[in-house]
Every structure is written in C-alpha cells, then in structure tokens.
Amino acid sequence: MNEQGSVGAVQPQTMHFQDPLRFQSGAVLDSYDLTYETYGELNAAKSNAVLICHALNASHHVAGYYADNPMNVGWWDNMIGPGKALDTEKFFVVGVNNLGGCFGSTGPASLNTKTGKPYGSSFPVVTVVDWVNAQARLADRLGIESFAAVMGGSLGAMQALQWAISFPTRIRNAISVAGAPGLSAQNIAFNEVARQAITTDPDFHGGDFYQHGVVPRRGLRLARMIGHITYLSDDAMMEKFGRSLRSGAVNFHFDVDFEVESYLRHQGDKFAEYFDANTYLLITRALDYFDPAQEHGGDLSRAFAAAVARFLVISFTSDWRFSASRSREIVKALLDNRRDVSYAEIDAPHGHDAFLLEDPRYHALVRAWFENIHGNLAS
Image 1 (tube, rainbow, N blue to C red):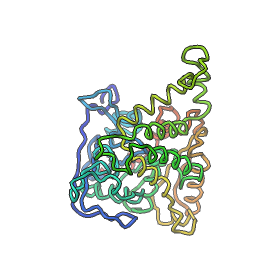
Image 2 (cartoon, one colour):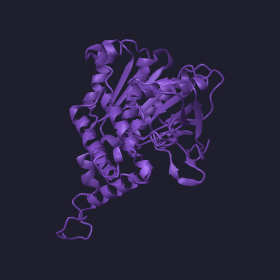
Image 3 (cartoon, helix red, strand yellow):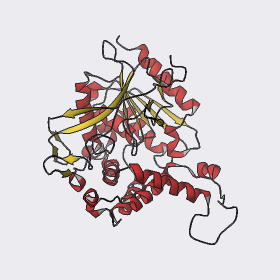
Image 4 (cartoon, rainbow, N blue to C red):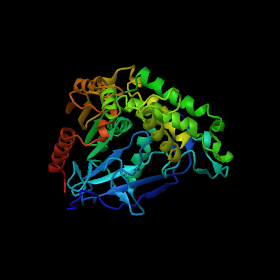
C-alpha cells in the first residue's frame, strides 16, 4: 500500500466516439471525445468498477496528481486512493469529464469539424440524462457491463440517481451525497443570476468569444463569487473570516476592506483563468433541468419505480443549497418503492462544500459501505 494513501501520478485518457449521440433536446453530436481517468485495477469478473460523477466546476481528475504539476491534486483525493474510504486496491475507479465540459471532453471550446470553428453558442444544451447516456457508452468501451457503484456529490449525485433510473440493471449501488431530486426555485434563481453575469459581459459575444480572442472574465468572476457564497454556510464563513478587516481599520472606500471580500475576489479571479463561460452556462442549465419526476406527473416515487440498486443517501445539516430535506425526499420516494436505502444526515458546519471535505464520520460511513460492497463482489 502507498503509505501516503495517494494513487500517485495519473494520466488522463481520451476516448473518441464516432457513433452519433442524440441529446434530450433532439440535437445530435455526430462524433465526440470523452476524457477520463482510472485508478486501481479492473478485476477478472469486471465487477469492481465504480463511476465517480463530478459536480459543476470539477472534472475527470478525481484523485492523484499530475507528474508535471504535483499541486494539481484530484478534487476527491481525500476520499479515493489506497486504504481510503473508496479503496483503489479493491476497486477500479473511473472519473469522466462530461460532455460540454472544458477539461478535454468535447464542449463549446472544441473545434466543430463541420465549420472549422469552436462550437461556441451552437453546442447543444445538455442534460443529466445526456451525460449518463454518454457515460454508459464509455463503460461499454471499457468492458464494464455493470458498475459496483455510481457515486457523486451535488450535481454528481443527480447523475448517480439518474443512472439508477436510466440503466437500472447496470448499477448495483447508487451513492448520493449532498444531492437533490431537482433544484428549488431559489437555486434556479441563483443560477440565472450567475448566467446573467456571464451573458451580459461585453466580452461574451453571444457565446462566440473565442473568435474575438477574449474571455468574459468579469462575468465568470461574478458567477463564481455568487456560487461560492451558496456553497458555504453562514457559520463557516463567520468562522473563517468573521468581520476581519484587511488593514485592521475601515478605509471608507468601495474596494476590498473585508477579508471575505478579498477571498471571493481571489476565488473569482482563479476561476476565470481556467473555466469556460459556455460550459458554466451549460452545466447550470443541466442542474436546472434535472427533474426525474417531471415525466411522471411530478411523482418522484413513480420516477424511481424501475430502480433496483441499493442506495446510500447522505446529507449535511448546514447545507442550505441542497438541504437535508431534499435528500429525505429521495429517501421517501425509494421507501415508497420498498427499495434498499440507507440515509445519513451528517451534523457538519461547512455548508454544501462539506461533501468535499474530510469529515471522519462521513468518510467512515462511505468506507463501511464500500467494504460491504467489496465483500459481495464476484471475483
């Protein structure tokens, strides 16, 4: 075992698909790439594969680091690796950058071979269902008929739930962390404000800013600042920043005075350097549109009727963006169908971002769940 518990240096891979993919909207991608990473080894029975689905600003880089940039550590590295809660000495873990992303998979910044220009505003509006369909095709290519588990937090949790609905016989465990069965009106409103910040930036150019050699940085910075506020709880922000003044005194101006202002600007500046504005629009819209109950007259229980997986649903008490009550809606719908579901509500002060942090109770729960899965694997 690696004493550091890291999968070590990792290398992203890209799979090219020539078979057209039809989106829920009716749009079609004739060909596309999916960028992914894998950790651990697929066993002889191909029964130990686990798919990790990413949230808004994450990617396929789930664990480990890149040899040329050791500081670029996977976003769930505290969860996944040798001896960790999801043990890569027991499981073969797959992380995928979703279509429409900006980290290697085909997205708005990719070249459209038909036009010779980036897709830009012409890239199709994508949904969670579309992502799951594309992930299933990648699983086919990797020789994975059934996942031991599909796991994700936030938007990733929505994908795990959709897997259980879309491909019930291809998933044995669904793990939803800080998820929801659909966004509340308040959450849709936050997303709209963030999108407006981007689309009204003079450098956005209707989504075709690539051809103008500019990036709508101001819009991206604002979008990230808005989002980041919602990921943290009031208590967490007070503990981290309080009302601390950068210079120790009020300066009577409209530039940065408080530490929290400095933090938000720093986060916004970083985000604008690496994230694609069109991808932000697509992913927030996919969040808005996720609603498995919609085609069942709003009945979430009916939406889960086809699911046969075991479910682990985890929420956090201080998460006001995807509150614990939303996870309990999922649990109720599963119980209505007499499904095998376990629920944990973790008393944690960190807000929505708690799913990314190393809380001992949370990680112990996930570890126990995967140990149980491993004990039942076909070898």
